[in-house]
Length: 250
Ligand code: PGA
Image 1 (spheres, helix red, strand yellow):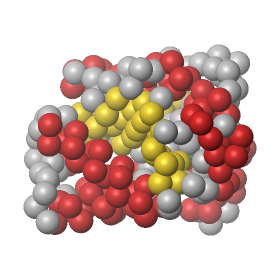
Image 2 (tube, protein in one colour):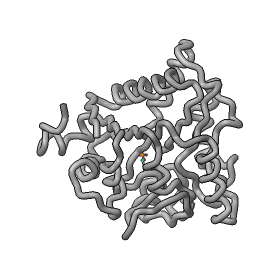
Image 3 (cartoon, protein in one colour):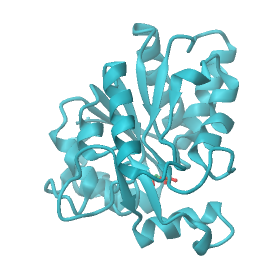
Image 4 (cartoon, protein in one colour):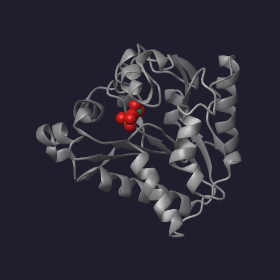
């Protein structure tokens, strides 16, 4: 694991945008795995800025998102489809036909999950997967469990995840209780992974992710088994690591 320490969220966002842009420039038809949540918003803003300055084109890029809530439609403002349009796609020259997000309205979970895996396979696999991390160590919506998940599946969301996401909804009850998510094997088969972590509230889980045993109760620990992972985290998120194991950050 390569760890990049940044002073704050702004620097984290700029650095991660640079890494994504450099991927897009080095392979113009890259397959990008994208994430939602609050952490990547600054990264997407920085990408939009660089695109405006004509530093990069997304014309031949395909994207696949990690997950989508089950039971809400694409035009629901809380859908990750709307999020991606609002935070990124509306402002860059990507062809919306080349952007993929699980269809939360497909009631046939098996069919939806197989479709999504086939899309990723037919694209030739993910070149660079962006990840955030939940306070419980979830990546995508892979929640703590007795075993690591494999392929895209329909997951019952953890109460902590529902609570964390309730800030985007009117109430806890309004948060969908299920989602379609790439599985751990799907994420781990990306050629490169970029994990973004910001804020003191993530200090414990980031410490456990980097220094804990690989364990499905903390899904993010699996990243230790991937050979090309970069973590970009700010000082607050790395505060526990910096206090207890400063030497692992070069
Ligand atoms: P956040 O979510 O970026 O909003 O903290 C991350 C996640 O739950 O994966």
